[in-house]
Every structure is written in structure tokens, then in C-alpha cells.
Picture 1 (tube, rainbow, N blue to C red):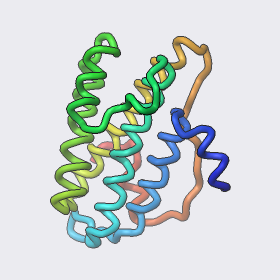
Picture 2 (cartoon, one colour; picture 1 turned 90 degrees about the vertical axis):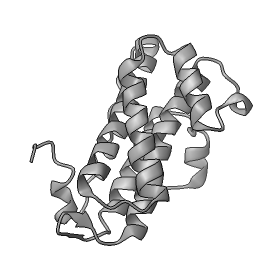
Picture 3 (spheres, rainbow, N blue to C red; picture 1 turned 180 degrees about the horizontal axis):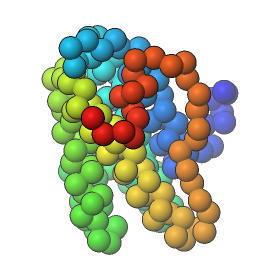
Picture 4 (cartoon, rainbow, N blue to C red; picture 1 turned 120 degrees about the horizontal axis):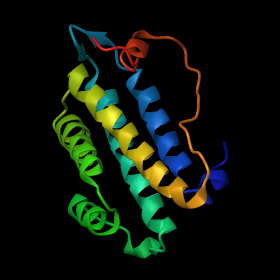
Length: 166
């Protein structure tokens, strides 16, 4: 894919899904052993990308509501404040953003956490954030935005992202 294709669409839900997909692909490079990911480099990279996917979704929403790119948040506290002010009835969104921030950004990215459950919960909530923002945006546009279907080689990680409860 060319870079110019994404620059025009930098602030969109599909771009957030693309980030999340890239994060899953990166995470699949880390082997799993004894209930943990064994290569923290890939886990940290994937956690950072998944965290950015959630923030991309929020940016897309704020841009769609008329906010200028220069006014976008620079910290998690600013994102929380914008969500509180600009998105009505946002309890579930705040809860999901908190999990994404703590599990992916702080524990996995900064502290090198490699527990499968923690990473899985962070990824699930990143997807929830993107879906919630997508629903908010589609109410105004009347279009449906879904996560793109991507095919990857089957690896051990595929069971990690299944919808089945363990």
C-alpha cells in the first residue's frame, strides 16, 4: 500500500482498524510459552500500536466533530477530558480506554509485561473503543464501518484472539 493512500485517510475509523490489525500481526511474531509471550520486543511494539489504534479512533471522532488537527490531544489526560466533554454517556468508553491505557501503554509497552491475559484484555478493549467510536460516527453518517477481514497464516497466536472463552 502506498503512503499517500493513508495520509488522506489518516483520521478515520478504518485507519484505527488498520493499526489494530498491524498490532495483531506484530504480536503474532512472539512465541507463547507457559502462558506468556516470550519475546517482549514484539509484545511492546504490538501494545504500542494497539494503544495508538484506540487513540486514532478518538482523533477521527474529534476531527469529524470539527476539531482542528492542531487542537488534538497530546496526553492521555487531555483525551480523558475531551471524552468527558464531547462524548455523551461515556462510561463504557472511559472504562475501555482505561484498560487500554493501563494494560497496553503502561504495563506492556513501558514495563514490558508479557502475560497473555493482560495483553488479550487490552486488545479486546482497543477494539471496543474503535467500535464504540465507529458507532458514534455512523449515527451521523448512516454508514457501517467494520473491522476489515484479513487473512494471516495460522500460528499459535490465532487461539489468543479467538472469541472462545478459556
